[in-house]
Length: 109
Image (cartoon, rainbow, N blue to C red; front, side, top):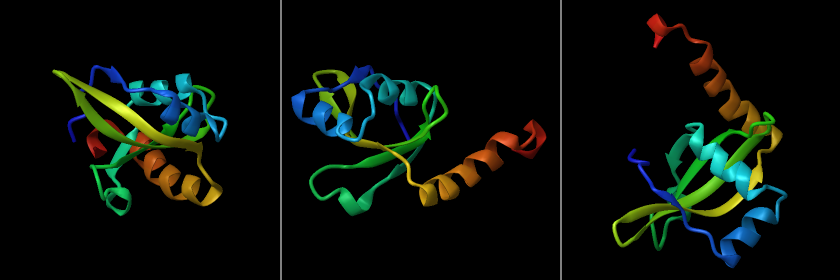
């Protein structure tokens, strides 16, 4: 999946929706800088391609971000739609897969 982007697309609407759950803009942007696990979100993609990203903040809190990619001129931008800290069941599901990936030795990968 091509996540080569040149920045973020923030406005009052998506900034407020992401911060509504107590997630800072900095945590969202740092999540993408650290290579989150990304998957399509076809259930919420009626008008545009939606994706989800999961990963951890610098403080180690599991984070979920729904987003889309927008193009402005020649720039590709991540537009977060919503963000929240993950629930226990999500942590178990995503965390197990991530832990297995991280703990594999290079020859296992």
